[in-house]
Image (cartoon, rainbow, N blue to C red; front, side, top):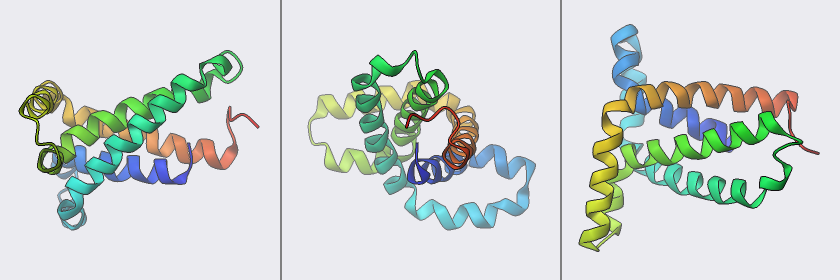
Length: 143
């Protein structure tokens, strides 16, 4: 997955699960507050990066039987990045999208994902750590 994807997952995950993290560790609020001004951009980059990973995953389906762990991680990373990207970056995305129907679709996606934001954030943190470990130890990675 690479270090960029892992770091992006960790940042987006922390922002996505901020409420859950602060509830368990109130001392983490100061660090999370430092990330908050960049939430929109982290969300937009995450959504775009997730779409790119999903397209790449689809283009490489032929290797799924040879690298099952890697391909499952790849798909999970793509889906989680897209979901968190929408949740974190919707405000900024709507400034770029002028079509009312597209904005309505964004709002519908946000409404479906919002109740699960904390869980998606925790999953992103887990995937971020797994992606780092996978990159460092070359677990299930082709080549």
